[in-house]
Image 1: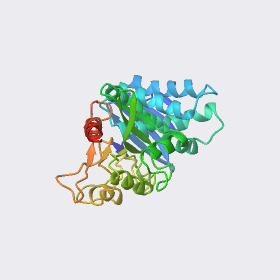
Image 2: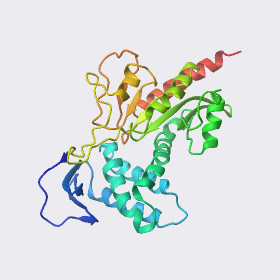
Image 3: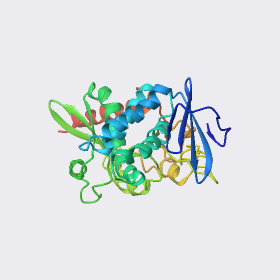
Image 4: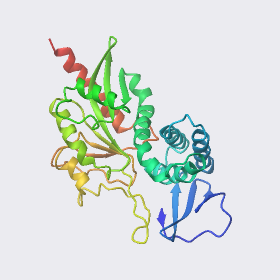
Length: 312
């Protein structure tokens, strides 16, 4: 729950800058000032130890001048996700890790927190997917690789035969089947913390992948909240609903530009029934595995193996 709720008068358990934190059992309550307006953010299923550990992890990693900012973000998020598996993963990213990162980064590095987050968080989230799904996928002969470097992206697209038609920044995570020591790509994931990150730019690459028979899903935290005075900071996302779809949702349900959209924001509305394209918005709980994305990845790998075995 987020919005203009009653401000707590007792001392907070944790405070830094204009951020105050009150923790009541499994409920974490944040108080902050946005555009000179007091705002209260309530996060269910987030305990005190997990919240405090995020700050400790960020401080420890950012204090190391050799450590990448993306490592601090990834590690802090994975820690709180494991500690609070039933919490909304999108809120953990947006209200717990992001807000503490912006408070802690200036204590260790002369960087603008907002700009730093924009540069580092995308790579961090791609690495999160790699870490979360790797154990189960590796167990069935599937490799998942976050394509952090431009060379990695180029190599993955080249293996799909797409380097001439698709820019080399339009794929985030690659999926491979492993057989007899040979690795073969069967799909790639378009990863977005927020669908405001120009998801339309990924559409041509996704369509080209699907035309060649590669699995091309969209995976998102669907982070989006609006600040006061016109908003309340509730992280509702940008997908809308099947009855009132946003343009982002239409890319999936109406135009079939991706092989489904997997959203880890528990407030996102999943597709209801059949869609015009046959593609759907599917809700997942990232902290509780296995999820639908994992099951579908394994299913598509099975199809890819079957197709490969029939080739002369």
